[in-house]
Image (cartoon, rainbow, N blue to C red; front, side):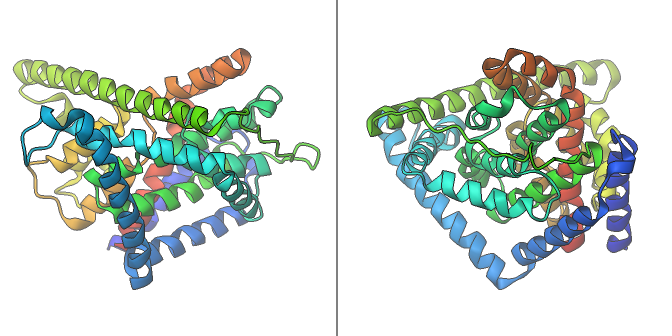
Length: 393
């Protein structure tokens, strides 16, 4: 039964993308089939094989060690602020982002990450039917983050037509930044985080190639990556440390605001209607959760968590999932978890358009105009990933 529902889910989510396509006649089905096969292949390896488990355990061990190293710095500054054997979300989960950001800066400085990102992107361009720039951007977004990635393609940003700009922005919203993966692993099983990262990369190409199909000519298919400005090692390190601090503070501020607002709205709805706002949106999103493979008796709870991510952010939804009083099955937890690992939410629309606008005001206004379609496409990517995990679990 789960295979039947899963297949219906795949047809439904890709079908919605096709119905809203800019040009259905230009949709190339061969790359889509190849990318779907790759999703199932990598998903099966990561979810169901000992080799995949070893990879996940290795990645998790690396990030666990990094969090331990980060904890030394955090404890030196904030160690006396919490009681022994207690934890603080800000201190334990968000502040380590500063160290991870510094590490990314070091790998950037020594040209290790640019080399990996460029050539992985070029390899992907051979199978996804898209240009080199689109492929590079998808990989770079998963490393640098949804706003920082546009700095690296600043040279070409002002020359891009709207359809190519949409693909770049959709990739940025469908992935997550390497700097906060460790924080996700504190809230979710590392297996789900790693699986979502890989599947979202391919899923982003599938959905954007259906919603926004186009051909890239040989003249257009040029990849120009902006070099980092010349800095000394310690100038660079200080800059990335402050970037990580800004991310941590921004996430903390968003969590404080969104959790407070959602709590207030829930209280108002419960006092007036006898049902919380999250329960209402849970019922609205429940059918989509069902098509992803969530059982009928759990789809409202799952829908509520999924919708919370869309209207607030993934951290709020992850904390809701972790603190849920309802005992969810392993399969439902896996589906929801991979759905949550992306930047597909309303706040990201403003972050991405603002990032592009800071580099090119005219293009930033273009991004703002297709913001809702951007969120729609990125959400379908998460749904596609969740559906595949539902089939494979």
